[in-house]
Image 1 (cartoon, rainbow, N blue to C red):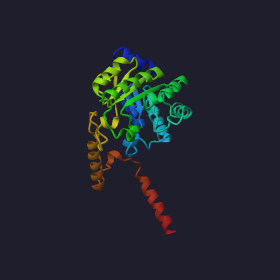
Image 2 (spheres, rainbow, N blue to C red):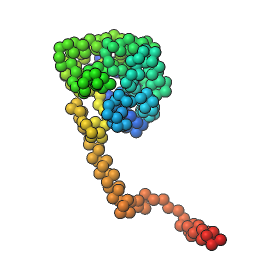
Image 3 (cartoon, rainbow, N blue to C red):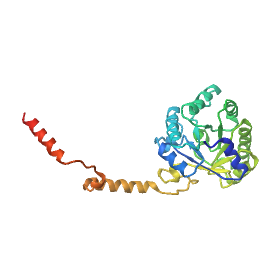
Image 4 (tube, rainbow, N blue to C red):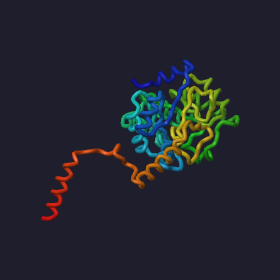
Length: 284
């Protein structure tokens, strides 16, 4: 049985911290689930770390569905959340329902994530009413970086802090089962967490959220173009991968790879037969 949104909400009540990671492919999803991660986000961050875009904005539904299918095949127990791309839930509620349903029906996800607070509350309420679990996302919302003026901490000032708390309450009332708080000051994140009955999942939001989420590429040290302040590299695999590839190149050039250990054998007497036949064929 997969982890359910009920179990996730109960983790808050039990004061059990919730670890969440992104994944974008079968192998990664399989590994992080085997390590015990209960929540996997197929984030639109794949646009930057997998597809090389400058932001998450160019990511399409087709790309998200493609990667979500792979993650679902790799993780059989974790709750999989599909990140709805830019402008796939803003035009009208009908459009949002269609795209969210694609994540569930085609992608195999069990929930979707939407960026925004009060502005998307009616959409959240409608999705939940149709049986689609929704995770909210407030604070720094990467799909709005042009409006926000870049990747900046949100909620430092009084008015913005008030708005974020209000947004969180409205999302909870609309039926969201959890809310991501991204790049919000730790004291504000703590207050929001205390005021909500549903879990908060922090990313750059301090230690007092009910859970934490990180981009797997940041955690493993795979994406070296930019390392956010909130990211901790538990490994530095980019360097190890480059070293491994350099060793491979060197061994291929020196003919020290492959060896007999990586080769297959056969009855070599058959080679003589084949060579003889080939020689006779050439003579004709």
